Length: 404
View 1 (spheres, rainbow, N blue to C red):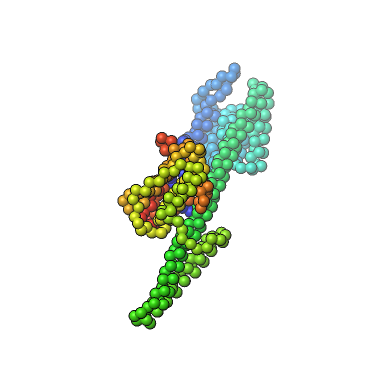
View 2: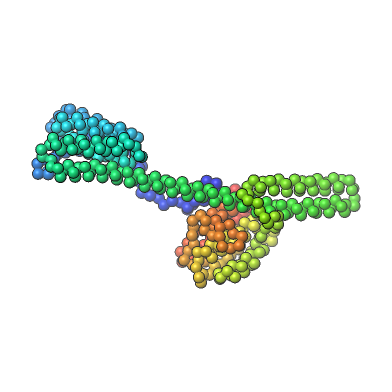
């Protein structure tokens, strides 16, 4: 259903495309193509009255067989050396003009297509296209049966073969460029999310360590028994707490692109979900909250991440749901994981990276941010349209909060 890309970003699986034999088995297919081109070149000939005649190998001059075999065999390398293959095809065509038999027109058409398909912006390719048209023109002048109309049609076929290959190559390059841009955007969003998550974790840990430091200082002051040992122990706790705060500030100072003006403070948790729901209702969204069973004591990171997932999911509903949409928030426990489910009955949300960003405190990176939080805890997150309409987000977060 999903694939995990660079920097931990879970990307939507791309739809499977039909892969023909030329994509699945390129070498075998090119070998078969070369053999078919050889048979057509030596056995199929034009007859008066626009008829096509199939002859036997015994009717083909040996020189024509040799040239046709050489030119057709070159098609095996049409992907790796398309210009060389086209050059061989044109030289073979020039040689057969003197023989007057087995002209490799089919091979030249295939070689022109391969040149357009696999050669990007090379001046030699344009020169060889002109050379192919020139050879065809000379062939028309030497053959009294061919008219100028036939020659013009041949020019069109040669150019069309090159142009079709050129357009396919252009579409492939554009698709590859879009894929690179999407991957770069996904990496950028993931890095921003990780920086923001690191800052929040810093604030959670730093707040608790600050309390530890204060408590240790108070214990040092009121120690009644074995004062010397108590003082030394509490002083060590206090020093460790201060060092941890300094290290965390340094870490977030490196990760954070801009200084945080809000300073240290406790981050929200599941206890503040009712307040969040009221804020969303004030913004115009009908929301219901169901809390089935939640352990009273959760690791701070699980408590924070569950809250943030609900916040981001409601952000998406506000942004994409439209008027009159009802959202349901359910919080429960299954086995050893917290289950967070947010669903709505609207027309459906946006699953692209970047959806979200209207609830105060949300990141604006929607599903990417929610999934990143779940993965960091060793959990999972599924998001997608509901069969009955609307959108659904379900996250499972291990209560221990330890990544897998």
